Amino acid sequence: MTRFRHQEAGKVQSPVPAILTFLQELLDNGLAFSTVKVYFAAISACHVGFGDKTAGQHPLICQFMKAARRLRPVSRSLTAPWNLSLVLEAVSRTPFEPLQQVDLRMLSLKTALLLALASAKRVSDIHALSVNPACMQFFMGGHKVLLKPNPAFVPKVFNQATSYRPIELAPFYPPPFATQEHEALNALCPVRALRAYVDRTAGLRKSEQLFVSWAASHLGEPLTKQRLSHWIVDAISIAYNSRGLQPPAGLRAHSTRGVAASWALFRGVSVEEICAAASWASPHTFTRFYNLDVTAPSVSHAVLGVGSVPNVSA
View 1 (cartoon, rainbow, N blue to C red):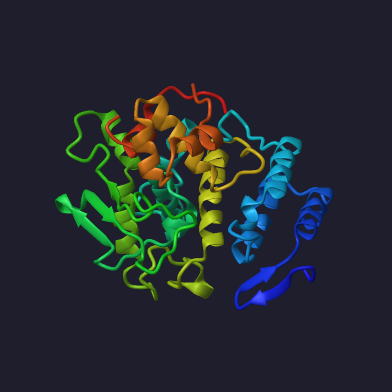
View 2 (view 1 turned 60 degrees about the vertical axis):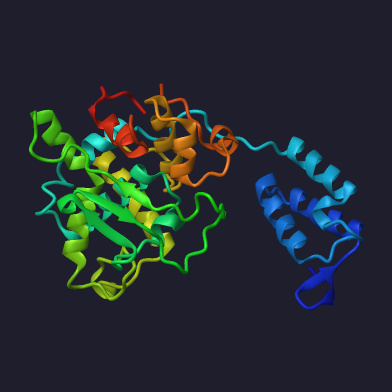
């Protein structure tokens, strides 16, 4: 990016034609519009601007970006990428249960998946959680938990109203059980899994970060965001394999947000509550990028309750 000349500390200046040429080259190289937009956001943040306008407000650049969006429209699948009811049913059985007897790997995968589904948070938000008493508080005899991110955490998309909103998880069909079905559904309780995970890792952890490595070579060390993403994908894949099925291709940890939010909406949770739980500033983000056709009192209960509905093919 030598075409951008340094003007002042932390800022660059470049004429409009140079910026447009650079952005056009990105499109010519086959990059998606979303990727081009990220490049331009970086340029705009470091550019001195044009008069009283930022680089992003220049009329020619605005027209270029609108045209680029029409040429490279953002596309997404309208159907869920994997079967939530199938995965939840599998997670409530072997090899993920009995919870007190499974190895640390399976306990870690199950806890990460249930927390991702029950909270509808980004992996980065979950990665920022901590076992420090100021960030994790269990109530009601350990059946309810309040989770806060590490104060040093900077969210990917900051929203003053929702970015630092604590994750509050209530018990999901706790004992005593009224029916055998309720006992089976309790195997999907994220609070139960989290309590078991925190207890199991207490003597080996080398960090206050919630999720730590179970691998012998890095036992107890803080987990990276990339590895946490792999845990969630691995949990879904193992759930499919345990049912004798091949996992869908292209599984991504981020898909838990769309799947969880869409099922919550389908089961009666308001869009406002979903957006607040998932830290979306506007319902527009959910309806445009995450709302899937998946044909309660809280997001977590609505999502986990899918484990009790008849199974449908993915």
